[in-house]
Length: 274
Image (tube, rainbow, N blue to C red; front, side):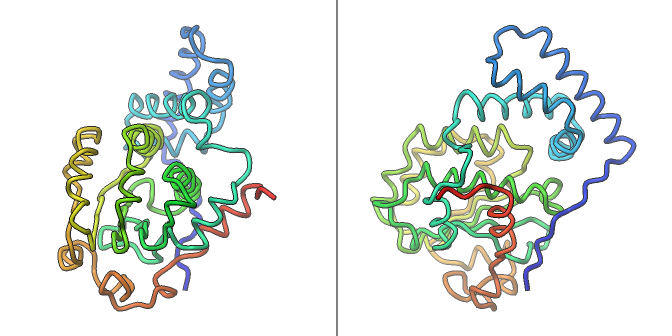
């Protein structure tokens, strides 16, 4: 059964006050900052009147208006100026392939702390056909959908990477520009909290590759990383009761464990490239 559902966002009195503060901060920024590009200026002007969007940034940044302001400005800059290729007007064929092959997916059940589990499966990724840049793009669509579901903004999520089948051809994709793109998009721009970055079934080269990546990660994210050659340590963090038996040593089938409602929501809400 698919258990990820769209949330109705209703602001509390305190959140409503913070939304008004954020609106004011954005309007002042638009007046005072002459260096904004026209696309970013237009986007921020629209964001300042979108109370649902503002609530997501306020809630995701734990009612901290300054952090919400920094994130929403960064979001506009990344979307329109820095990484426009991550935000295409139509869903590319490669993104649909990434979902269909379960290179990226989401589990139905959340962990004991209510955190959503996003899964990356290296075994399903043919690096000669799909680039890491395209996977980041698919991840962006996934995050756009997840921030509309209950608890994701307040409880955060875990990225669970199944490294089984990983190879050096995959490792070569982890370039510094790609790592910076991942951090800037998912850590700095979106109002989300990555509560865990777990690499399981990791072959020998994962730790050396991560050693290259690590200096570019935020300090909080570094503290939330697990790299293990098996799944025993994963079970100390995530109950086997909600994991599939395949690759993760859990109690469910892969079909029982996986949510398809998010993928259907993405396809309904975005134009598919033909």
